[in-house]
Length: 539
Image (cartoon, rainbow, N blue to C red; front, side, top):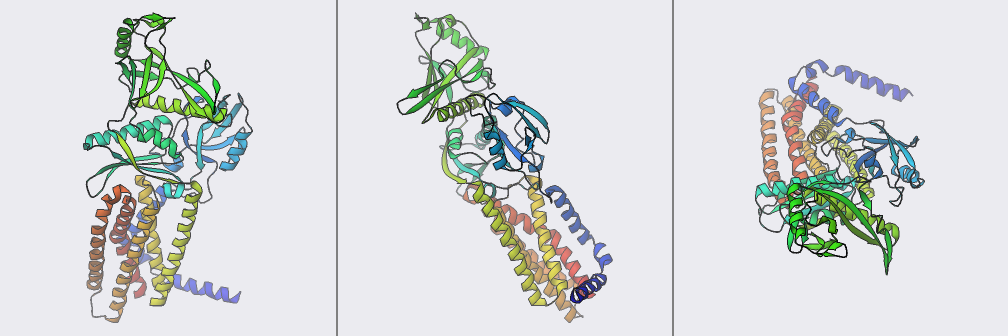
């Protein structure tokens, strides 16, 4: 007890000896403190954890969508997204609890969901898996830092145009993919154009919480939809010919007329949904059906649906529509599976994909998948835990080495604090601009921090040398130190800029955090450290 008291007395004496007033009146130190405070406000760390589960996306035609729940905006911060708090007044704090509660639901049951934005009343759907309310959930975030797929799990896809494309068409394709993914019910996505050093164009797509099969169906296909009577096209997918696509339960879902049937090796289930044609498309249909004959109550030619030039369905046209420019059309299709529930899910999945393509239209260019990476959420959490552990070990090692080098806590502690401040500023900037933090970005932070240690040692040596050579001007010696620091900064910057474009943009996170970390360090943190260390060593 006496030893502890002596340590506390020693720390009290040391704190009184620190020239707080002189340091806090320096504009360099005040600038550093301002950036740290602003970064913490942007990051908004939840020190005591967060309640509930974060709603990542709402599935189309689901119970949640029909109750009025909406997809979160893709640019919204993690803490701004809606949180699921309870189901039927039972708190939900983990994905396991959510799965356990929803497994107890039965078809046509009324369910009350309480979220951070209000209360919703849902109705479970018979035949659509009553336990599936249509919510894509994730653990509640503890800050506004966006974690990339390496740390949170998901799928990363690298797409390449099959032919040379203009910059305008490439950006138009990026926007079309964003719209297609958003309409499909995926909001936690990143879609951006990229290029390599050889000048090849790519599109990088990162989607959290989806399977590889879903990604292939949505992204690898151009999605060119057209309906033909004979060899004549009646309408194309997209807003020019299709003004409305039904996605509500009253005019879409499993087809009650065909239902589900047994096949030789499984089951098949049908789906339907209604669409509204534009007046021009309806006129084309009326003109083409006028030429057809009537056979057994139907016209002689069916309406054939093509997706990416492959036939997906044939619809018989009622004789009552002969020569009539009808605007209301019903689209049908099917899905198969080994068991009935699997066939139901496949039918609804195919329906959602077809609805999405009809709404958004075909992509301006054809794409092919170059690379797909899929990471499970559990593996992402393991990566994050290991990164945090390594970061603490690295910081402890730096403090130990610096203390052994100078034998002064007045040098080791400020140096460690400056390194931490640089990390906080990088994380704050990433949260502000919406940059996803992945393993490559964390590697960039480590590089920036390691370079920072070198710079701080150079500044410290110059300051300590100033004490030993009083005749030398402190300002001159500090100028010499900052000249070395700036030279090193410009050298690393020149090395990072090519990486911004290398690897089709996959290394952009590494280059981004390295450049940002070095810039904050050289322009803000290290000049402040020079003032702090000079004041401390002078005392």
